[in-house]
Image 1 (spheres, rainbow, N blue to C red):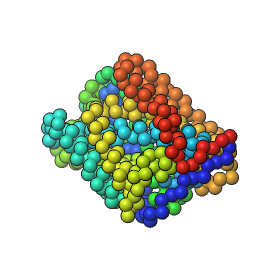
Image 2: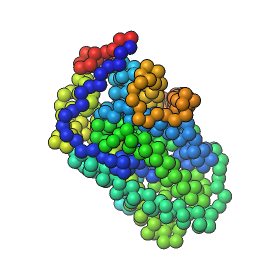
Image 3: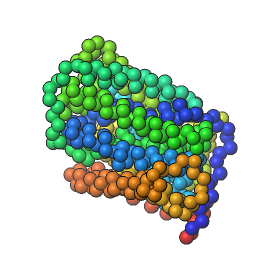
Image 4: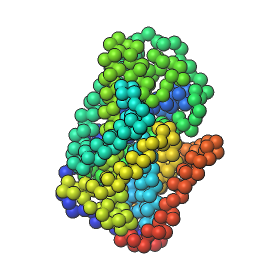
Length: 447
C-alpha cells in the first residue's frame, strides 16, 4: 500500500519552542507533579498503588516515550499521531485515531479544572455552584492564554515547573526526616469503592500524554534532537516527582483511608513550618493543575485544526490567527470542557482510560508497520535495543492495553451506565467516518 502524502501544513509563520520549553510543556502535558495520584492510594491501598506507579513506566510510559520520540523525530508535523496512523494504516484508521483522541480529550481536559477547584476549595470553602464557577474561570483563562501562542504556553510551563517542583522537594526531604505516623497499612484491600480499576485508571492517566506533544510538531525547533531528549528526560523527572512525595507522605499518613484529592497540603501541616509549606503546596497545586490544562489545550487544539484542514471538520476550525493559533477550535473545545467539568474526577479518569487506550494501540501498530514498510525513512532517533527493543516497545503496551480494556469491561458491569457511555464513545468513530469520509481532501489509500 502506497503511503499517503501528508496534508499541506499551514503557511502562517509560527514561533517555535526550544528544548527547555518543550520539556516543560511535556512535564505539564503528562504530569505536573503528584497532584491527582492521591486517590490511587485510597482506592487500592499503598502496596498496589506504589507498585503501579513503578511498573506503569516500565510497561507503558517508557515504550510510549520511545515510540513518540522515534515517530516525532521522523515526522515532525502538525497533527502528530494522526498523521502517523494515516500514513501507516490508511485514511479510515487515521480518522479513528483522530476521532478517539478528540473524544478522550473531552473528559481529560475537564479533569484539570475539577482538580484545581478541589485544591482551591481548601482555601475558599466553595458551594457546588461556586466550584463550577472556578472551573469555568480556569477553562476560559487557559483559552485566552493559548490564543497568545506556543511561546506563551512554553514560558508559562517553565515558570510553573519551578513553582511546583520546589515545594515538593522540601516536602519530600522533611517528610523522610519527620517522625513516622505509624506503620504503613500496605494491604491491597481497597479503602474505598473502585479498587484496582480506579487505581489503574488514575495511575495510567498520570502517565499519559506523551503522544500529545507530537501534535505541535510543526512548532518545535530542531525536533529531531529536542523531541527524544525532552521525552526521555521528562519521564525520568516525572517518576522522581511521583515517588518521592508519595513515599514521604505515606510515612506521615500511613492509613490509605485518609488519602484523597488535595491531601498533600494537609499532610504538610504536621511538619515544622507546616502552615507555610501547606500554603506553598496548595499554591503549587493550583499552578500545576492550571498549567496542565493550559499545556494540553495547546496540543489538543491542533487535532481538530488538522481534521478541518483535511476537510472532515468545518473549515472555520482550520483558521488560525497571526500567531498560528486556531482560535475557533479553542473556543468550541472549551464549550465542551465547560459542560464536562460538572463530573467528578474519578468518573472522568475511568471514562478517559478506555478511549485513550484504543487510540494509543493504533500508534504502536503504526510504529511497527512503518518500520516494516518504510525501513529507509530517515529516523534521527530509533527505539533502542534493535529488534528486541522494538518488540518490547510495541508488544508490552499492547498487553497492558488489553488489561485496561478487560478491567474496564469487568468493572463496568457494576456501573452499566458508565460502561455504556464508554463503549458508545469507543464505537462512535465508525459512524462518524461513514458520515464524513466523503469530505476528506486526501483519498483513501488502497492495498
